[in-house]
Length: 210
Image (tube, rainbow, N blue to C red):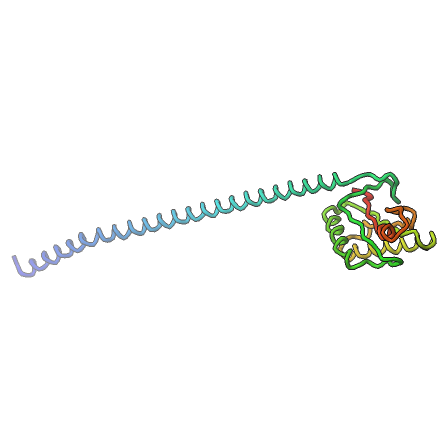
C-alpha cells in the first residue's frame, strides 16, 4: 500500500471519529435548549396563575368591603328612620318629622348670628343631610317672649336664615333648606326667666321629606 493511500485512510478515519464525537454534543445542546424553553414556559404559567389568584383575592376583598359598606349604610338608614317622629302641626309643605339626630342651635338675646359654640352642631346636621341627599328640612326660628310679636317674628326669620346660610356654606343645597319663623309663639320652656328664655331662643330643624 502506498504512503499516499495510507495517509488518505488515516485522514478519513480521523474525520469519521470527529463526526462521531461531535454528534452527541449537538444533541445535548438541543436537549438543554428544549429544557430551558420548557422551564421558561412553566415559570410563565406559574406567574400567570399567581396573578390570577391575586386578582381573584382582590376582587373578593373588594366585594366584601362593598357588602360591609352596604350593610353599614342600611343600618344607618334604619337608625335614621327610627329617629323620625311625625309632628302634630304641619310645616309649610305639609307633614313634617322630628329627628333626634338633628340638633337645635341657640342664640344670644336679640341676636341672630350663629354662635361659635354652635358651629359643631351645624356641621353635624350638615353631615347628616349629606348622607341623605333626598332629605329636605325646614328651619324654624324661635324667640323668647320679650319684645313685640311682630318684632319677634322678624327676629325668628333672621335666625332661621342665618342657620340656613351656614348650612349652605357647608355644601347643603339651598333648595333643600326651607325656613319659617314662629317668633315667640312656640316656646320650648313656658317659664318667664332667663333659663327658660335661653332655651326658647333657637333654630329648630325638622324634616319635610325623606
